[in-house]
Length: 151
Image 1 (tube, helix red, strand yellow):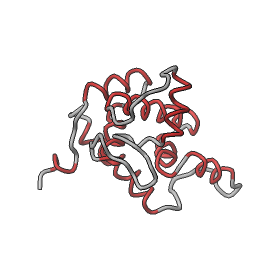
Image 2 (cartoon, rainbow, N blue to C red):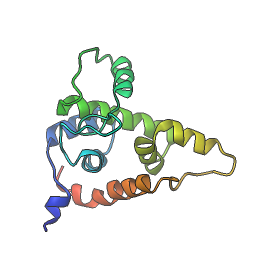
Image 3 (tube, rainbow, N blue to C red):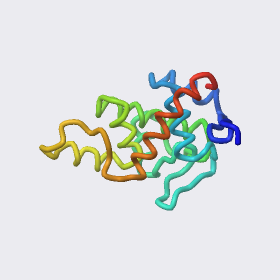
Image 4 (cartoon, one colour):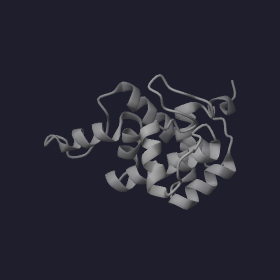
């Protein structure tokens, strides 16, 4: 099987636009989309996360309020979802200060990461207690070399 099957790419224009707007590495955005939805714009998780970057509706409401996007947005719309997901990634990068911790928070939840870091025994978060999250982070980070030349 070709690597292209494992690392599909769609929505290059939308990824580049959002990455430039929020000063986020476009390759990281593509890796998150691949890990979250496999570039399926209509993806919905069992927990209710929607679209390419798997945004939870309450998180989307927060992002819309912060960015002035307004009401009536469609998380299944690729441009909207990528803008929201990239905004949220920028927020997590700023809050936690490094890519790996931001990715853990993107997958396992900001509240969980904040709680784990509040534990006096945890100086730096290098892994998550969740196997699924660790696999997710590895998948996103490992995809960077492949997406570098495709986005």
